Image 1: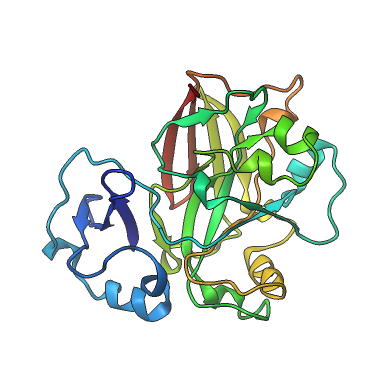
Image 2: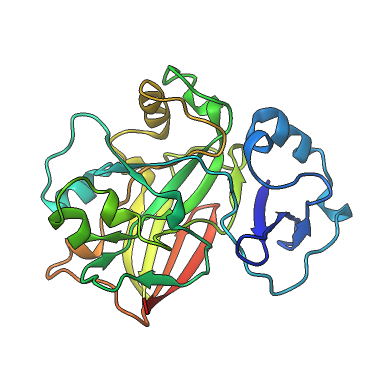
Length: 281
């Protein structure tokens, strides 16, 4: 299934794509795409619904993040071999964990706002892993059974805030609008192997990132298992599993985003998101 949320920000309606890619209204069956709806039993109920029998959503609707009620966004740094190489960083011996504030969540086609004092706003296409069944102390072998599905996530980053303003990465990762998600939430049955996907980023029509999830240092299963040793993973939590090489900070010379730029990101089977950069006012 491909699930969406559409409508005005803060007042989105749950939906599902039919075989022709049209949005159908799911509000008669669930309140939203969140919580127990993402657990195995909740998704099994949705899978029994025939989208063709649901009302069509009005055309031209804004899409919000396809999952809501997100408790935490757990991000993994330097998880692609080539990305670690382009940054000149040492490969971490364990997954490098930081968090992104949920207030940064943005729709897949909403504008991304460059902070007023930003000089180094950058892009990062990532495979977002959405938790379904609660996970605590799970093994790597059983980890994927706790995954509900996948999304495209842009881990927008302000590199000066991230690296030069003291403390951890969070302040450079959590600015408002710095977490576009979507367009769809795609259930696990549609993704045969999360380690066999192409991730792409275009900036103003030019390819910047074109990587494979097989380049991950730590697989999706490893990340779910690893994180569950430290904290409970709950339905709706998202793991941003790292970005391939091709970020602006890794270019020679580095190149960063400015107002008027356009970013297009895609991952096999997960659709495409598109955003315009605007200056904060």
